Image (cartoon, each protein chain N blue to C red):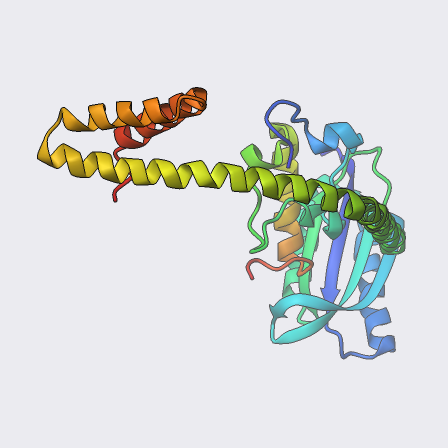
Amino acid sequence: MDTRLAKYELMVILMPDMGESKTAEELQEVREQITATGGEILDEDLWGVRKLAYQIKKQENGYYAVFNFTFDTSKVHELETSLILNPQVIRQLVLRISDSYTLKKLADYEEQWAKDDLESKQKEDAEQERKDELKKPVRKVEKPLKKEEKVVEVKEEKEEEKPKKETKKIKEEVKEEKEEEEEKPKKETKKKKEEETDSRSKLDEFDEKLRSLINDPDITL
Amino acid sequence: MPTFKNRKCYFHSEDIKHIDYKNTRLLRKFLTQYFKIVPRYYSGTCIKHQKEISTAIKNARIMGLLRFTR
């Protein structure tokens, strides 16, 4: 049988409260297992004791270690079984890696994450500064302008409100008369038109509004 | 989340070739707040990378780097 070598990555979680000498022994055992069958350790990364995301074998913490090595493809299963049977190993994971892969250590990742955090913080700060800058000058400029506009607006609103009330009154009259007879309201409205000959254009507008109001099914008196 | 018009796979745009299960900060992007894997129609990743992410997340979960649920 030919022996085919391939790249593998092994991650082991050991019991956390063994002591430094014992953990070193355990790691040495793993290394010996790898080298005994013609494997070669390329890279290793000892993370140390970390907190687990959840309890495994009644343990809150675990000692993480990562190895990159070449290994005989047909004997990977034996390595895995031996690790499973070892009571000091909480969990293990053997993955096959492509040849171009190089191990990226946890320290590198942590540096990257710290950089990302800094960048995101800077972005947030810049956005907040922009917002603050936008807010401050706008308020100062708007205050004098708003007063002038407000006066104009109030006048317009008053002018608009009055005709509405009139239309409502007219509408009430019209409805009351409608109950009695249907033809009368038209005549009365005509009389009113004759009285206010000067503001005929306004009246036409009121009529249009009235019709729209009467036709609206949602409005109830 | 990318909109439907200009959606592009995150790993294609960032030019990430190997998705590592140890890079938990990257994997966290593709998990919901309850640590479920975000489906492809939300994250906009291509099928190839979605499969790689899901395996990476599952490996990380087994090794106690990520939690299964919240």
